[in-house]
Length: 134
Image (cartoon, rainbow, N blue to C red; front, side, top):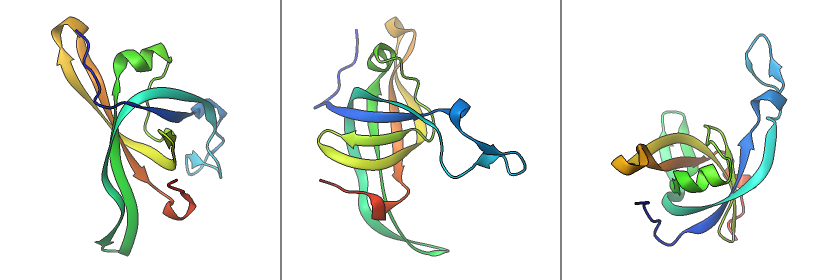
């Protein structure tokens, strides 16, 4: 028995390509831009936890957005996608976004699926000034 998503919409993901990314050998971090693969469209269930909220941190005011997209493993497998931290979400339904996956949580451990059947991909907005929200 497969789990179902509530009101799924198409989510456009651009995966990180570590092989095509140039790294600084001393700092071990990407130089300027990160290599990205082709765009993949996968159905997902979206939940915005914070949408363009202002929060106070020790460093000062921080404007950010956060939420998650719930994906079925079977849909990810059909699109040959293995989600990774720092994958970029370009579009959720008809809304253009510029958010990045910063945490993955496996859920829905069904015995007939031999493990988790769902993954919750938490995303964070790293550059709110560059983002358009339809």
